[in-house]
Image (tube, rainbow, N blue to C red; front, side, top):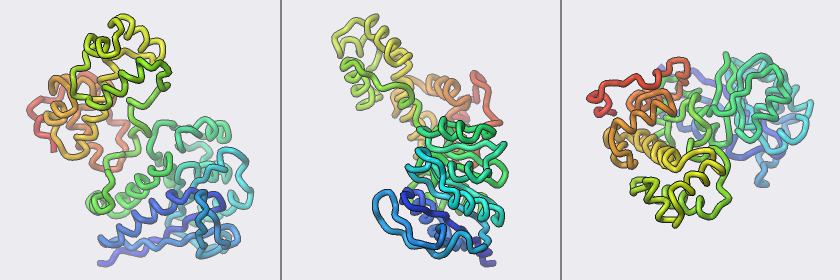
Amino acid sequence: MAARTHSVGVLVFDGMKMLDLSGPAEVFSEANRYGAHYRLSVVSVGGQAVHTSIGLRVPADGDARAGTAYDTVLVVGGDVLPESPVDPGLSAAARALADRAGRVASVCTGAFVLGAAGLLEGKRATTHWQHTTALARRCPSTRVEPDAIFVKDGTTYTSAGVTAGIDLALALVEHDHGPDLARQVARALVVHMQRAGGQSQFSASLQGPAPQTPVLRMVQDAVQADPTADHSLDALAARVRVSPRHLTRMFRAELDTTPGRYVELIRFDLAKALLDAGHNATQAAALSGFPSYESLRRAFARHLGLSPTRYQHRFATTTPASRDREKPGVKVPQEAEGEGT
């Protein structure tokens, strides 16, 4: 049987981010090639064409105030939204569209429009990590989750920075048509489907302040260039011609970590990417520089509360599973781990 037509109304405005529109639109369009039937309409207040943040003109299919009902309403973001109050006409249009829709979603700073429309009251939400504090300040009853790719609360979805709109759209497709079709879309667009809503917006190795000291920048560059090399404390100290004790003090003072823990984070990020690409846990450990599978398992337990294979299986879907975390230190049998998919 042919899929039922699912109408998506995308609310745009002057200064919007182009990728907030084009990313999800490509996902829905690609899904139609595999049996879905999404119909996209671009709407604006007054039905006028809008100009994006890169200067391109985007025509509108209709007026957001026309009373049309959509199955999904998607609100794009823009740099202006966190910097100034949301235009009352825009927030009123978002509210009216949401009242007639089956579900409402925002990409990046589009969450500020939902917040201004009262659509996030008492709910969980996220936005671009640079603006989560501002969103929490404007929406005091909203529980803002600064480290999520996207958040689903009932029929309301919010997502993080621009490319997270693609993750969000894949999640909506999976909800509508199942993981198999969503995976086909992800493969066709050459994007990962593994970034579930519960995953971090940015890699662990990129969190925290950037080093100011040239010596630390040299160490970071060396580790990132070849994570599998010998990066013991003595080897790193010799590379930059300081004592191991002095290098450790510098790491603690500037980065609030140790050289060993920093190396582990870089290797951990690489191991996750290898698992996402289909390598099993034993292969990921060897290719990312971990001395053994067991050391990789311990790193995953520390940073995610999951074993490597459990991570690989869980994030083969877009569905968050944060309530089902494996307890750190609980070991999955090694023979099962080595057989990762």
